[in-house]
Length: 121
Image (cartoon, rainbow, N blue to C red):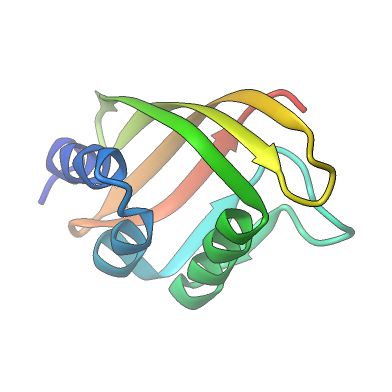
């Protein structure tokens, strides 16, 4: 699959609420995921499918998702961008927030090898 095909598959799965399946099927084993900021004293970078799956699971366990919107993909050579918009409540603080995020994905050999997230905190 090329970047456009991978992007279309990612967007379709995310719209179905299957973000874990995205990681299991579209990520390269050595994927590098880069957040805009480091959380709880951790690193901004996460490497490997298993670590990315755990990071996603942790996020879902700590947020109640009221709505999610996914737009894209917006292709550019071996990369594509996706726009995410969320309405969530942070379970620990009970604070409801709306967040917008742009993700840039890099594809090699039909798999996502890098993802970078851009958002305001």
